Length: 287
Image 1 (spheres, rainbow, N blue to C red):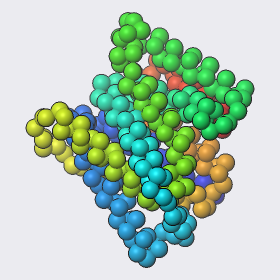
Image 2 (cartoon, rainbow, N blue to C red; image 1 turned 45 degrees about the horizontal axis):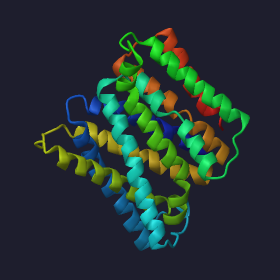
Image 3 (tube, helix red, strand yellow; image 1 turned 180 degrees about the horizontal axis):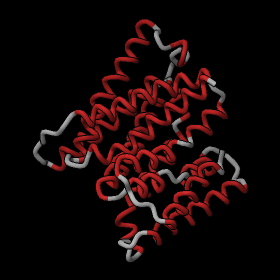
């Protein structure tokens, strides 16, 4: 029961942070917010790694630190950089579109399924076909539900970023088990946040825009949610079954939509609700 609570709280923090991005970037450049948030999270996970390296504080929860090779480190960095584009397109889409549109589309797991089948040797089973049909139907209903999507091109312009986010996240999440196994949870978390922060910093340099003074409170809330979500998730791995973790973590999208309704009072039409339901169904079909 305690493990179930840990993973539920972890999903709640992750879900809230996904919805809260829209408020954090409302009056601020989204790349600057990503970079500033990354400074907090990178510092936190870096400090955690140093403490564990020196005193083994987190070893009882995350296990002993593995020994990794240089090629494994290089491949891990490459995958973290690849995944960083997922957050970039997700947050960019949040700037102009509703949480109830961006969150479900960016959570499409079709790309993760294809990666698992094509590169990890998994078999394509019937439930994967049903999940794919649910994705197609859900995206179609989202297109039909909103009046400002007057054409396919306008739909792709609005939600193309969310689809790209689902691609980068889907592929990288399917492959994350390797760097986690090579580096350990804490070092991998530090490396991922570092790559996200550095990528945002490079994008800011290329934009050559003047650094703006932005409120730090929303950024700290985002960073705190990521930190707490990660801590609770890692504890859950020691106190809950894998089935519980997989099933309850899938509720993250539902929690994101609930928080989106609380924060922004977005209107949900019948077609949009049905489309979201199909996208959520596609997630649970592959458990």
